[in-house]
Image 1 (cartoon, one colour):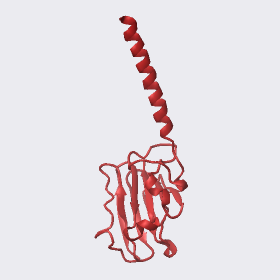
Image 2 (tube, one colour):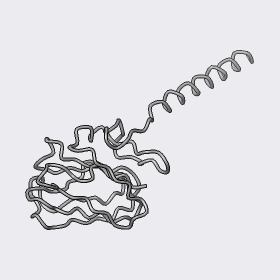
Image 3 (cartoon, one colour):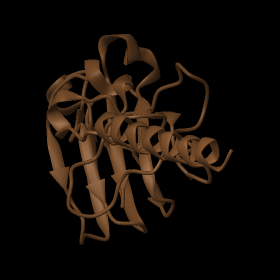
Image 4 (cartoon, one colour):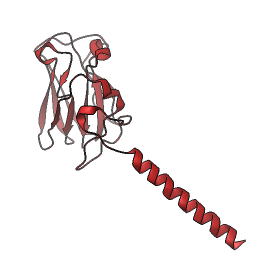
Length: 167
């Protein structure tokens, strides 16, 4: 009977190690430009690697990225040159950084798609299709670490999306 218990413990341990190895293989990280498998706006990773962006951003217009860690304030242009994009699309910042969304063309807004629990990205005022006039700014200070995904309501289907990794 003792041999049966030892054998079960051994097999259970091997199973646990195999499962951990499979799960570790699933957590690969990707660079900002190619989207990635990501997750649900969970913990944005921290430290040296690149963030694992959610698959929601796979069809985002543009592939601009900026590592703004170490800066207290960062600007994201909304609709630069009349485009249906955010610039940068992928942004890395430290906790406590203020993000200024500058509306450089008309007919856009910023709406949260996903964010970590306790995240403060409320988006611009009004409904899904209510836009912000050109020249206006929407600012938010992000304290909660993790991945924030957002979009422009009127242009979400064209891929006007962006992501912020707060680390």
